Image 1: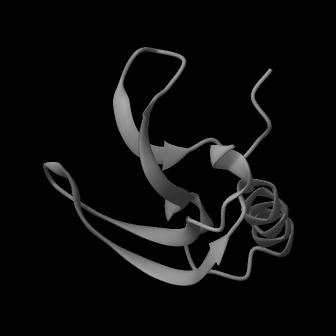
Image 2: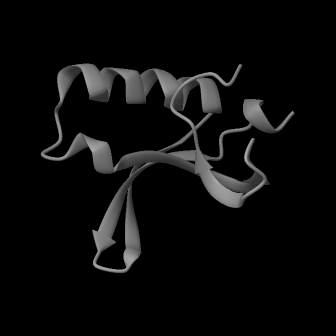
Image 3: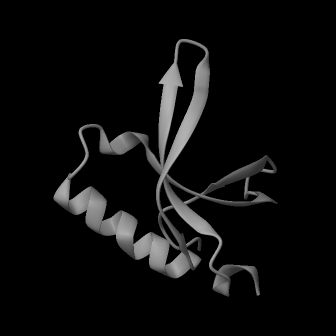
Length: 78
């Protein structure tokens, strides 16, 4: 299963005037569940200067809105 493979990274999004310009991987690879637990700690500790620019990056998939993306929700999808 895709979620159980270690191929997810904690990533900082570098935003510009036109949207996403680049990203920087800070740690990983993790399983998706482990990455979500780490992101929860990051949001609670606010250990980064702009923690809203942090995301989980992994293999490309189609999200719930039908968009093809490589970024994953920090919370378990219902």
